[in-house]
Image 1 (cartoon, rainbow, N blue to C red):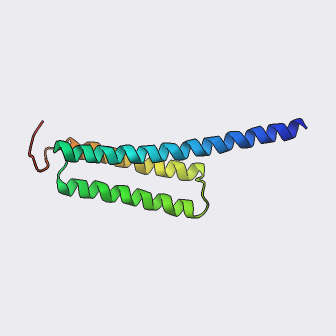
Image 2 (image 1 turned 90 degrees about the vertical axis):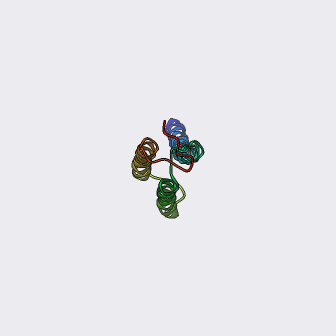
Image 3 (image 1 turned 135 degrees about the vertical axis):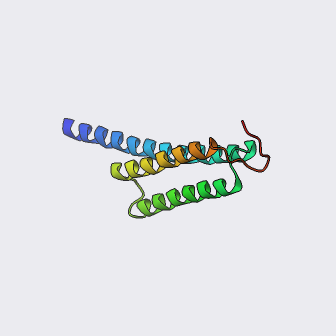
Length: 109
């Protein structure tokens, strides 16, 4: 009886961890999209830079879709892979927002 309860508790814990990781990936993608939009509004990102960053975001979404096609849940390895892609994208956003090339309004901060 105890082993059944322990197995059920471990199963519930694993399910909640996977759901939490999915929320983290989605929120990071949303945050990065918002950063790109903010860069557009502030003039820190040119049209070309926004195109590059948006293409990078689409590529990450395609990778996620391919990983989810094998099964709806992501494994830890898949989550790490997406995490690495999101880390690189975040660094790329930061790099392009802080370079000297500016968008349409040409403001230099």
